[in-house]
Image (cartoon, rainbow, N blue to C red):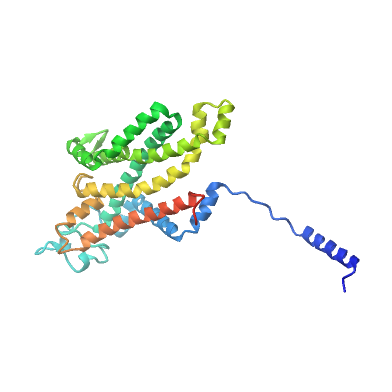
Length: 332
């Protein structure tokens, strides 16, 4: 048997009344950056890498406070921690104890923990500032080459090819050997750091310049750019209001991946003796000193090596996560 018609109408009316009593859920719009953040939060490896990056930055910023609470001045000698017969730290594991958390340096007994903390300042400062220089130059020249095209694009592209073929490492080594001890108002290690930042940033901009140029070539033909031109927008407006905001994502991704490369470059140059001047703490310089003592005290080589490894790994994990989060075609 079928239900009476009036019962069906009553049921439908009741359902409509119940639906009317339930408040409608507002449709919330999401910006591209919020969507990227949601995608980034799902990547546990990227979050772990980002957490380590933040901790490293905090360690570099608050190095004096950390060393004052947990260590000794980075350039202070502690001969009482050294075995006079073998010139190695007393005790096992490189002299690690309650007062020297990472042990002591062979021969002079300087606190390894303090030098690792202060070495983070040098590595991160050089890496970040050289990345800023490279991003600025690469963005400016890349967007100009891609937007104007023609002979402007040809000249800038050939300059980028020339710089990419230039032996950067050899040039830095040769340049540092002739740089005076006082330059740009800086002295000592400040001069070396300034030279490293300028040279690494200058030779690094063609990489990001190529990416920005390629993206600009694609974006300049989009409908919104044509619409801006038809409305009488000038070149400056199109460059800074239409193109540049759409280039933020690839620039951000490449910056996060450029920083760990700069950390390795600074460590390599310090290892070769062309980085910061002693006694300024540097992870690469600590590795160079450990070469003469690794057989008797391998811990002295392992600790700065782990510092470089963890830093580069954290930045790479975070950079990969940012790239996946900002890529709308990504699978995660």
